[in-house]
Length: 289
Image 1: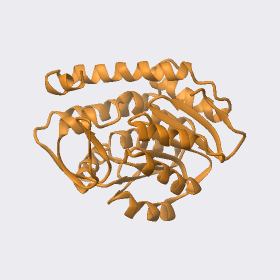
Image 2: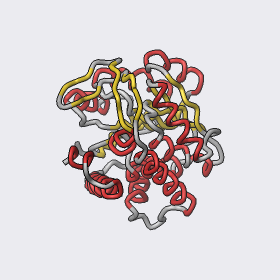
Image 3: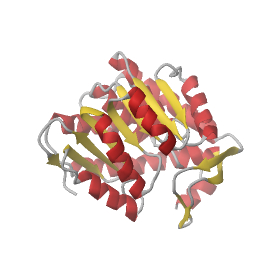
């Protein structure tokens, strides 16, 4: 189905199908979530807003920001050509695992439609940042700036804030720069380019502690666990960490199982595609696995 979508389906239909799929996944995860506490309810309310089933609805400026982001997605996805990417994380292709550091030729259509957060999940991140008053956000895996746009566009509503976003590829980060600048988000975003093992320590020291960390840039189980242990001391009390693609592979599933069992976490929410943990700040509460 995915290969068919990539090859022949028109862009608006692809976007519609992807968001329908993700709304179904998010709705199912939401109905199965039973973690208690204000933080968990805050996450669930953000999910309800992303699904359009919250009594509060979405603020007008949020909906305007989403439309602008999705217009940019469409404009870039329609561009011919693409990006030569040096991939510092492990990525799958046709069942094979590409080695770290491999050079890939990736079309804009691929990057913006099939390798970026959809509006459904992007709006979840936006409402989470906005609704919970989060100010300092770290993202591992800028990609072309779609998830970062949803996050950064929420920060002005909180009066202040900064997204520090790390990307291994200079070419990809430059596309994200153009996406951010097209939305006048330059003041909210600090881009850092280079392999995570070279850039992460400095970012944690210079910009932490963080209220939210979004890990979506290196889909390798052992690396993900290492990032968790490295980042956790730099997360503010009651801060959140989101792990994307927790069932991407066997190693990612194992990593998520290890992370959510960590004794110093105060809470866990398993949303099937993403896993969310709260670091410190209260008694442990978990959602069903």
